[in-house]
Image (cartoon, rainbow, N blue to C red; front, side, top):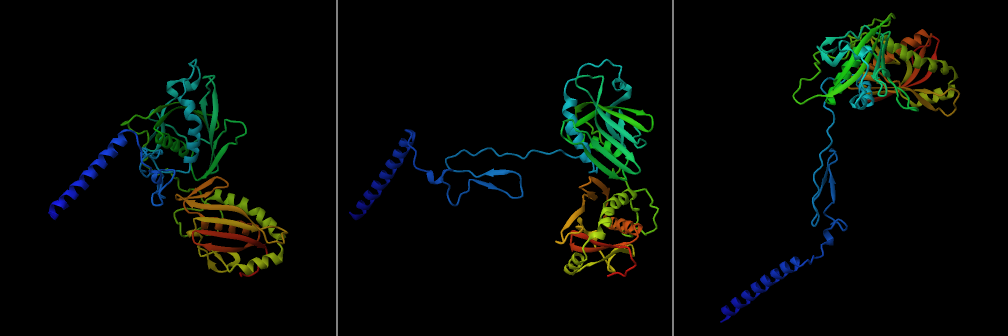
Length: 421
């Protein structure tokens, strides 16, 4: 009897549960919605985050929240795919492309056919053949030119040109300029040492290809080693089409200029002679500091020296820069900043007058937009010692070594024959 009673109770519970489930289903079909605010985006659960972002990734992943639709996953915007080595002229090439690609893609009025760049014999597609710029596979000798003006065809008059950039080669220095096409915006320029004009147009081909574009151009040499390079059009690089780049040789150009001074070059870079143009840049930077050193207050100089453990005359010995007879490790620096005391300043204020960084196998003077291939920190100190010697003295400096970040502060210039500190 007791067993039959238990079975009846279980049957009753099962029936009640089934009726309850059926009631919920019917209610939901009728439009009833239970209270789930505790899980809604407006009232997030303490253990459930609405958005989770991976710190080292640019993508954002949305966590699924009950009662909300899961948004589609967003893929990052792909950047250009480089098809050649990085070069110091890449920034110039990309700036130029930013300014002219849209213009080249726009429809143009029909020219009259009398302008030289309208002749099919004057140009064609700009490509690289054995790492040499070519138009319709015909090599062009850009390295023999001292100035190359880069122009585009005017939209309102296809028989006239609008100059947009220039490449100027003078005494081993290559100045690359992109002219502003808007009032109030300054021109952009870069100065590259130990580079030939062809490096600019190699970079132009590579960066255009990275944008799936092939430039159409015309070229004409003019008197006095000058030339005109006209961008006349652009077309899209098709999938499966052979690339217009054939980077079979390095684009970076090694130094080839031999200095006339007698101080030995660093032995750590025996295959590279010190760069004369770099010497001119450093001389121009250090000359005002030498001129002002006579006005540094002696008390400030002494106080600065007392607070810095490594001070003394900057010298060159054993093919290494030294201070107080100890070698400097600037060849390990990725960032080297030069400071100077302020003339007649009783507060001991220092200001930066030169910053050098080493990145992508290139030494850069970012404030001057000048690039030099290789690590040149020791060479820069070599030129400082050389210039100080030419000025009849030695620089008294303080040296701070923080590993990859280092600093040199000029605290005096001594034209006497005093001994090293």
